[in-house]
Image 1 (cartoon, rainbow, N blue to C red):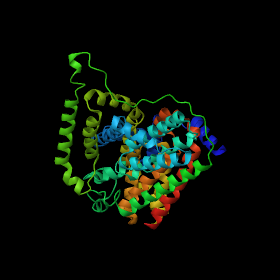
Image 2 (cartoon, rainbow, N blue to C red):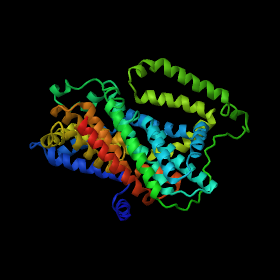
Image 3 (cartoon, rainbow, N blue to C red):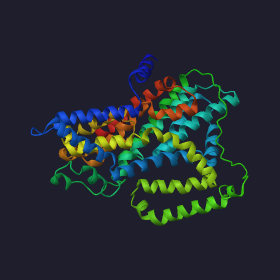
Image 4 (cartoon, rainbow, N blue to C red):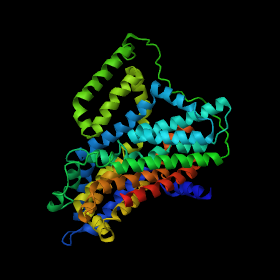
Length: 460
């Protein structure tokens, strides 16, 4: 498809790495702050020094650094879970039902979206490995499949993740005081008084309208992949077996026995899970899902599924590379946020949105602007830090319900993952496919998802 070739070339030729984009956005923010917010009685140099001070303070904001680490753990621990032997067995069982391109694409896409709804890190790697194993199984059984469609279907979990349990925006606003903390020095006292201490999952992720939108997206996208698979021509598959087994070598030294001890692994994993239920059973009942809750549960479960410390730490080592790209970007996003808050830029941008919006159109503008921002800030956590205060301020000023406005941001952020290749890199590495091979199909998924999300925001 010509359009996908154009998009791929555009990203290759003109879109630099996400870290470079974060640097350019930082410089742009500094320039805009100088132009738009400089008091008349201040010199450019004097105010510029002030802006750099705001930037430095934002970079090392302790609350935001904790947030960054929480997001990193969600991705790493999700990946670690997928690399366990029980997950391997589940993936292998699912491949038995994949006999044609159509039913394979439908199964892989639907299962991947369901898994990603629970945890985006888990869904990202699970979908990639499932697609790879489906292709390997087809190769072994002599089945003819269109591998690029299968690979694309293993990526669509990234178009539902932010509206799910581990979504950056809904999970952070579920923490007491988080919304007010990001709105300090942004909103007036009157507006601050309207901000709730938290917005729990009953109003966002587990609201009936979000669950309905999610179900419609799963049905529509998986059905679309089924129809595409019906018409697709088989492609050549030539893959070596991707080993997921986590069986440890026999310990050679006495010091390694503890590392390989299943008993120790089960004990520490069990202690973590027992502590988890003691500490968080009330939060679970109240739908107060937080990053700490999710990560603590995944930590205990991952250790048990890997059986021992050696397997667990080995899986962590394999998984950690996936966070390197965004780990170093977070401080730059925090610096941008520091400038925007302290110079009053958030209020200026919010005023612009308010001037062109009403209660009906603000969620739609938020959706499309979030999709655009995601192309340049391919991190849901980073995007929430930068764009979240603008969305909250605009929604409060226009009287748009905060849960709806924030979920509009989440929907927009996730949908253009089907266009932005940053998060596809782990999948492409595992499947050995190229971006241009999966892009035609992910773009169709993005189109279908956009229609559903926009209609959902208009109806609900």
